[in-house]
Image 1 (tube, helix red, strand yellow):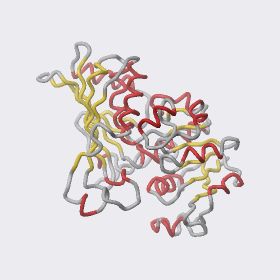
Image 2: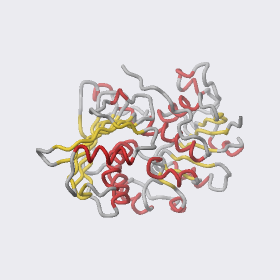
Image 3: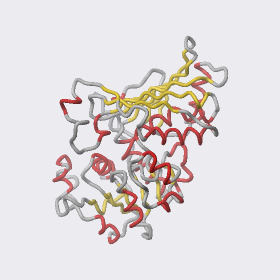
Length: 345
């Protein structure tokens, strides 16, 4: 059985670690290269000791990826850095899944308005496909460059997509209240993820300015076919991983809990990683997996539609979704390597 060769560019962060955790047991994948500019020559298991004896691959420079006969490369790099590597690799034969935000938005101008950097490779926007498989499966399958969605937008868009596409809600009155585990802040230590600031604490941040707002807004407008107004507020939970988004929307037509449930079941009927729940799910019910669990209902007292959506921010919100995109891009079953059972407790 043919095995495809993949490279992971950027090994030291949580996303690089999660990619390896998933791919080491993937039946059709061989990890041929893992890179780190700062720790060249060390083993991957020196950076992430949990992989001792499982993945002891020696880290190389990103420039050497082109010599590895690679079929696909994951860019597990910071925003503002990935675009340089996409440009560097543009004439290579391998496909790319970019886990940064550098090609998720519609234009370089929109990107520069929300990210603190001018975009240096606008050409990439011409070919990049937004990598949310539940919305763009066919386009992803033929893509050379897939822009993996953000973690918050994944939970929010999957919670909104059936309602927006069916025009059941007013796109101009959407409120998204999201909570994330601290791994969403990345592996580098800082005030945001310092233990004393996170433990036994809970706080909102990025109010009205978080860059994932525009990513959700653009997708909402594509789904609804009209302008959308998104009030998005992220919060930091004192847990290591997981996102729970509670979404509030006003109906654009007469609805009931049963009608809403039917809209979700019809929309996600053939999607293997969206599970519709009869009770509100918790983040531990998807921990370590590529599932998005969704509960939707109608509050007759307030007239609001309420949706609760949960994902693991490091899996469906990052590495797992990237592997799902890889499977589609390589012509494989999209579920390969992603059949983990949630870890609870």
